[in-house]
Length: 132
Image (cartoon, rainbow, N blue to C red):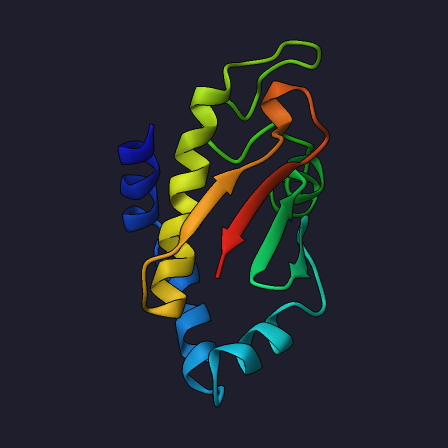
């Protein structure tokens, strides 16, 4: 699933490229994070906890704004997973790898991303812990 996430990121790298352009306009990584964390939108929000950035992703909100309907996951394999049906946490390693590739592309260095709760395993939102 990690390889799947890296492949998906490679095919959908436009967001990372745009974020990297914004990062390059900032004087420092800290400056970028300060500007980037506000305001949240499109079903994604961030919290800062010292050397961690916690990314919350709410697929139903993201789906409402981008696709016109709520979805369970942005991944096409699981986007239409019916309510009340959960999938294995293993599938979420794809999203974790995507988030890691995204942030490594912006920050220009290796980072660690941990997977917290996820929408396909029963939570209302997905949580990624990004170790800065």
